[in-house]
Length: 66
Image 1 (cartoon, helix red, strand yellow):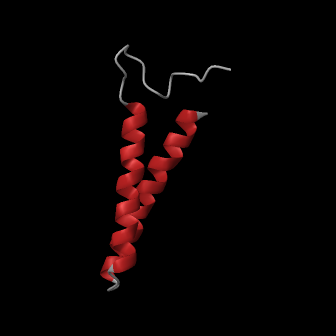
Image 2 (spheres, helix red, strand yellow):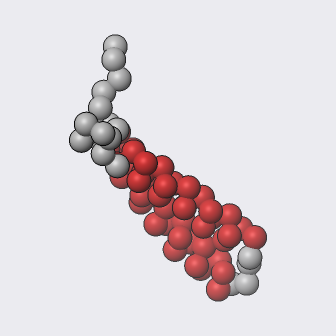
């Protein structure tokens, strides 16, 4: 389930970048800049969750204890 959420986050970040480019070309400045910031934050979260830990597993693969 976590990998599905990370995939959706990446697709959303890509859509935000393309949307920001379109809005920049239309002359807007503030909203596209905020969209790019959000895309960077989402990509950073995906990277953090995907980096392997000291024991070699990523946070995506680890399961919470029940």
